[in-house]
Length: 343
Ligand SMILES: [Zn+2]
Ligand SMILES: [Zn+2]
Image (tube, rainbow, N blue to C red):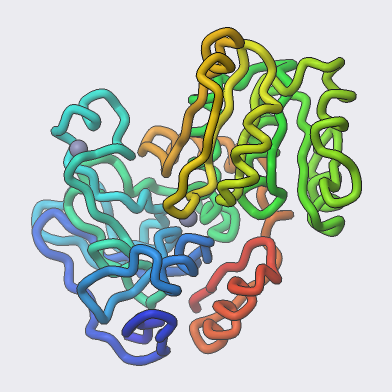
């Protein structure tokens, strides 16, 4: 098969790769659409690059069942499916609590096993067994369904932040994930402020229903948030970028009794905070990472029922032949969300 094969840091080549074969309990999916995530680019550039190379990245995959291994009863060839990408153990303390994203013994597409930037992808038994291969209705467009994985990460954050109607939410960063936080927060009926340095991104956020757009290069972010919240700060602050100094500064915009969520993966670093602030203001400082199979299935439903519209997030389509161009555009943050489509 043809695939985008990673040979080392910043070394990705479009070439032939052995066809995957479905072992017992496994399925092989013919990829129809694979989403390009910031994580893929971070990995390619060295942050968390797999030890065993060459490999294939891509963890946002939708497609059709192309092969079923021995014992697989629930799927037939040609079934249209979306894939939860983490092969969790299902047995550890965290899996038993439904917190599969914290599984103590996990691997997944693009980390440990080959991912979806390829014509075919093998899904291990664990993903099948956890209900991570979800059948799609015939009229559910692959290009929409592929957003369920990234969107599910924002749903996980929404759960942690206890988003509910009329909460004021401040989203820091209007990149693709920031925009998905926006959509999720609007789904829950929140009032959303979103901050970024780039007007084009903010304009997009405005089109997607943000209540207040803040260009933090042009106005003082703190003054603006305090003005919009009668001096209280935001009930929920979601930090959808990974810059430690920014995290340290914007945490303080959380209202008394509020929740601050560190969502964007920061590099190793230290920040300071006053413990009295956590104590007397009853601030919940949290983080969320990835999502659970249940988050994933819920997001698929919301996209299918058009409770959350994702089509306006899609900015660029590529094929494997133009994949290197996609990598360049993603590195330079020139696109909202790009996908790779397969015939
Ligand atoms: Zn992703
Ligand atoms: Zn586990």
